[in-house]
Length: 197
Image 1 (cartoon, rainbow, N blue to C red):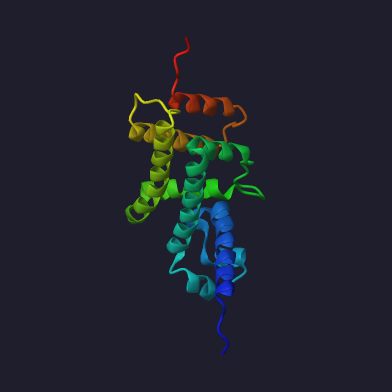
Image 2: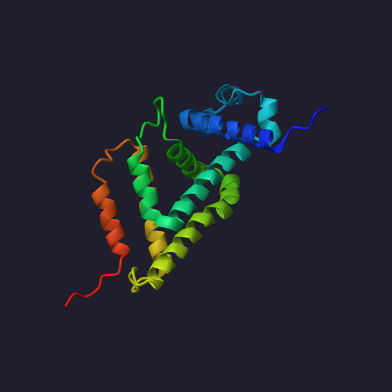
């Protein structure tokens, strides 16, 4: 029997993740039944669960990907850029082209409120984004670009609260066209203001 190459396994895993992301975005965690996951991925349940232990592990893998991607953007450009990216993407969650990362984030938030086991599993993963934000803010402070009268931990919590508020705003389908200037204010709030003389 021929051995399956690692490239083939990686491609199959990617196929499952991409299909599952679409399925979770369209139907939510509870509505993403095994049958719907099979349809979305084009694979059998055996193939899906060969790569992932169960539906929760599959969902966590998607959420981890999003958290890692966000942490990378934060490290390079800051958490406000993550928020700007959310605004620059069409917010068609229920239509033909759902915003998958936003939908995943909304589902994570819902499950954090209602599922203690998920909350425990997610806690260590969510720390990545917090640590990336703190590190970015500390680098900005060291460069003299960040206000120095507020602790970096407080500024991190502030930016994370703004992000959660933005996600909730978008989830409710409220207008987002005019939020760019709001994010300008958020960014300005954490910057160091030099005295001009």
